[in-house]
Structures are given as C-alpha cells and as structure tokens.
Length: 383
Image 1 (cartoon, rainbow, N blue to C red):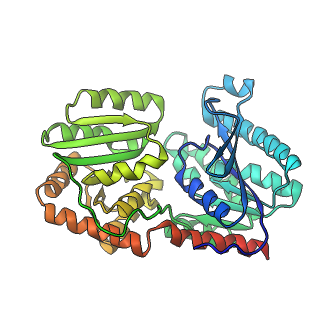
Image 2 (tube, rainbow, N blue to C red):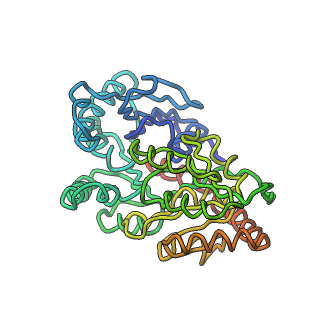
Image 3 (cartoon, rainbow, N blue to C red):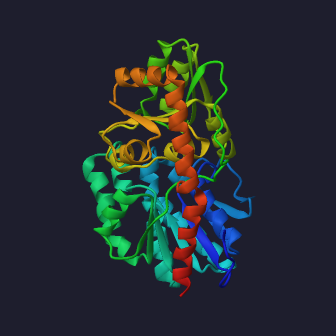
C-alpha cells in the first residue's frame, strides 16, 4: 500500500515507443500517480498512429512524431539520433508549460535526451534500463555499431542520479559502469487472485503473447503443434511487419493454431489465465536472452500457469531451479515437442507447477512488492 507522503512531484517519463503496449512503464506511472505525483509520458510515435495527446488512467501521454526528413530515412536506427534532438525539443516545450521535478528515462534510446534535459534544467535523472540495449540491437546491426551504443551508454551514464533495472544479471552489468545506486524493479504484474483456478479447455492449450520475432522460436512452435492435433496453440503480439506477415501466414495453414495479433495490455492476463501452459522459448545465442527475465515469467506466475522455457539461460534458475513452475528444455523442436507431450499427458504435474507459479506470485512476483522499491527511489531523490 502506498503512503502519500512528501511533496507532489511532476515527473516526465521518456519512452521510445508510442505507449500503447508497455506494461512496465504503465505500472510505474500508475504507482507514482497513486502516490500523489503527476506523470507525463513523452513517447516516440514513429508512424503517427496515435493522438498527439491522450490521458490513460490518469497518465498524461504526449507523443512525438517524426519530422518529414526522419520519415525519408529507411530504418528506425537511422532516425534514432534525430529523435534524440526532436524528443529534447518536445520535452523542453513541455517543461516551459509545466516544469518537471524529475526525468525518468526508459531504456538507452531515451537516455541522451534525459542527459540534455538534466544539463539544461538541473533536474534529477533516473535511468530505467529494461535491457542492455547494445546487446538487443546487436542481432540486427554490425557488432561495431552495437559497440558504439554500449560505449556511449558507459560515457553518459555518469550524469544519471539513480539506475533502475530488471534483474540481478543486469544489476551486475550496470554496477561495472556506474557507482550510482541501482535498484532492481522486476516486470511483475498485479496479483489477479490468491486462489488457484485450473484451466478449463476442451483441448490442451498453449499460449504465447508478446514480441513477435525469430528469437522467440515461434515458427518452430507452429511446426511442432501441427504434428499434435489434440493440442491447441494461441499466438499473439506485435513485431516487425515482415516477420509478422510470415508468422501469420504460417499459422493460417495450421488448423490447431490461432493467430490473434495485437492484444491490448488489459487482456493479456485474462487470456493467459485461460491457457494450460505458457511458452517462452528464448534464443540462447542472443546476449539479452542469456540474462533476461521476460514478461512471460511474471504473467504465468500471477495466472498460476506452468512455463516451457529454454534451458541454460538465467531465467531457468528462477523458473525451474528456485521456484519450480516450469520445464527447461533444449532449444530444439524435439525438446519442445517432448515438453508439450509431458505436460499434456500429466495433469497432476501441470497443476503442481501452476500452484507453484501462483505461490511465488503471492509471495514475491507481484507488483506491490516492486511498487515499494519504486517509491523508495523517488523518496531518496526528494532528500
């Protein structure tokens, strides 16, 4: 429970997306509003697909659009440096209308804007690193280019007053490049219930909702489910249009796979609760995957559902070794097929894993626990 103490602050959150599908940012902003603060989220709407200004559950959302020149560039990575200038300009205009007390930058792709704002207005700066951004872009860019962003992050992080990140491996990484205080705030979800409810499906149902790209083993999942006619699979989310087009077509060719596309944030947990098992296969070659703790881990927990995950990655230590609510398997179609069959044919095991999932959600993996840590970060900056 939040205690409304101290002065009310005006907070500007910087975000390099249009703030339509970002549950972490939403949860943090809502918690700060409940504590009596005012939160404005300035997001980068690359396609001008949403209103320039909006209010979402008390959060003021302002969207920054591309300039005409930015739209001429072929890739978002080419537009990024121009967005840093455009975002700074738009944020400065907001500051002139209603000055802010704190800048909260989500991910490295907004940090240069926050640093410029700090230099200009002398504001405290929070860096909320959801992932190691240089590792994330390495899968799409030459290594030298990704290294440039890693070096830039190391150079400008000295201007940050507080670092927030998502798990212990990332805390260790950032502790090597900054001496500023670091707080772990996991991507936990609001607790839905404290009583375990088994699924009630005619067919054993697998679910994947999230980012749609080749690192999530989704085409392979479709191929595996195709050979298991008594299993149903639901896939949804958003991703790059080229990949989504291929995935959607592949799903349409398989009778027992249902592609549902973009899913509103508020529907993710209700859909998850209806499934038997959540699939969250990460590519072990990807550096971020090796240290990541994806949203699926927490969505499955609050819904009391087992997970199928890739073995050998950090999240295996949490999901399988410590909390025992999933199966860790080889990153192969054979491994995935065997895990699906094992859970399908063993409802007692499925329920045991599901109950373990809900137990850890009640005890630790819920947003209230994370909210307390977020409030402490802000209270420390008030001093």
